[in-house]
Image 1 (cartoon, one colour):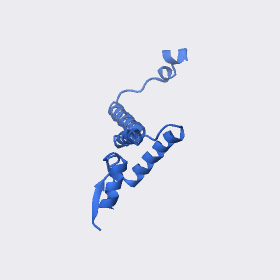
Image 2 (image 1 turned 180 degrees about the vertical axis):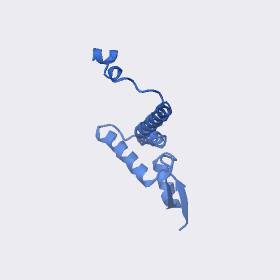
Image 3 (image 1 turned 120 degrees about the horizontal axis):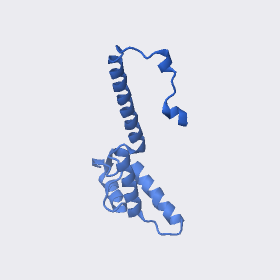
Image 4 (image 1 turned 90 degrees about the horizontal axis):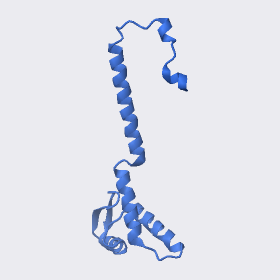
Length: 123
């Protein structure tokens, strides 16, 4: 038996498989190669549609799963939140660095320090 390395068209995971197995996977998924994890997810999704009374639409399930994998590869919601947090920290550290360079200014008098700001009056 000859083994080939295949790369999943959804998630990019590499697997080593026999030619017979590769042919079966491609036949089931419309010519696409999917790793074991993605193929199980697609089968599950297609099965959910079939249990609702409709015929299992493997092609639609593959497209939906590929869209999810693309989103996750690009960072997805968690990646966007993490990037936003990094940007906030960069901004905060930049402001902190610039305020420490201006710390040579005289500090406000105690009277100015306790003065209410217009924003706090409206809250």
